[in-house]
Length: 559
Image 1 (cartoon, one colour):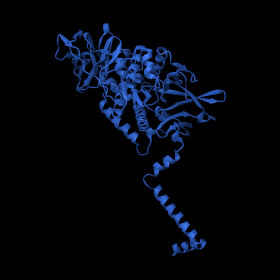
Image 2 (cartoon, rainbow, N blue to C red; image 1 turned 30 degrees about the vertical axis):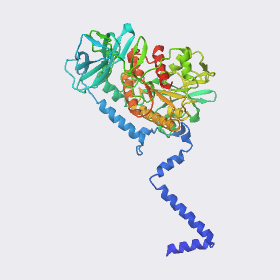
Image 3 (cartoon, one colour; image 1 turned 90 degrees about the vertical axis):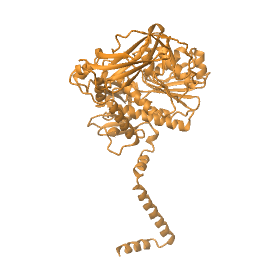
Image 4 (cartoon, rainbow, N blue to C red; image 1 turned 180 degrees about the vertical axis):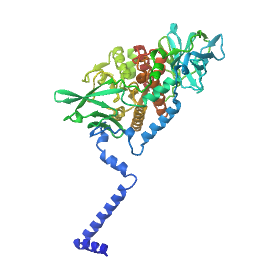
């Protein structure tokens, strides 16, 4: 009865039939809207509605009383979170915990036994030579599990020749180390115990325990002066924070907000080590430089390799999308020779200029890719440096050849970027956002490398970035499938005093993950890890002759 009375009152307020019809239509629309909002797509819709503007930008400046990272979010896991979990589970199985009570129970290079399978007086070039390795501890007991971080290499110093060996882990304390005999002559074999399995396990555990090994110091502009404030990928602070957020890609960076200064005033950054460790004293002893990179084949004599009149296989021209084996090539007389494709030689400035004519080349990553800019500028004199303003080594670098319509640009990847030198954030962008800004065509090439600066942080940071880069490349291929994209893997580096932060073991793990994520994408691979093992450079910044050969592979991909 009360409901009828309410309807009657509404009708008396609107005696006109047309007005009544409009009222009922409005009520119907409102009811439909409410049903839509309560549907399963409502959260997604509201997220897009709130972020319709910020999705166009790489970052969103917001202030929070505490750090709330995506990694610790309590909402339902997104696709990227599930991918990160899946990869972490794989890696946890690959690198299980290996606790030890004494160093004597860990792997010993001196006590391990290596045997050449099917030994011969001479071998033929192209043959595969296999070494069976039985790892033992310092008491001479055979290990019952694998996981040792080994590095295999063969070389002929007089020929300036070198190549990686392939290590197969049987997960029972034994390994098969395989060498393909690429060249003829006297060849020496080497297997280094970089870290015992207990050390590798300790590095993996410690890496994923915390974000706070590195201190980021942000510089906020306050009129004509600067104010310093602590920043990071996550911050445990009760102070008000600035949150720099890429909502689409779920990337975030934080700074403690300086009083009376807006978050947008952040202009520069530098870093330093905090001195925090998640390793025990015994684990540190295991990872000391004196215990790193110990030869396991000390008593092996060199082997003799003959040509045997074997004919070379016909090879296809190098092109993006090819699967790269390991090893992917070798060095002979100082030059890199790929084994899976026919590489065009670019030995003169003219041949390089002819290849690059009308090309737009975007280099995105760390300083190992910036080395390409320096090399090309010195070798190809028609490429002129364009002053992009800014200061320091990490500003945008551009090379131009106006007559040939060549542009080559390098830009650093965004957080985390670990260096004591001050760098600008004024034109900072994550690589996926940089890729989104590339129109792309058959004369556009992108080269990407990340990894060295990610080593001191939990692996989830690296995985998230690589997945986001892959998605950006997929978007690029939708609008411009003819664009060429090449990934340069991490290279090896010197044996660092701080193995917890910078050990090559971290780079090895990241290379495995990178290849796994990009396995089904039509991209080219420059295996810088393989190259620097073959060249035995042991430097985070390889020498020019290695850079020249990396660029040679790149040019073979695009020309």
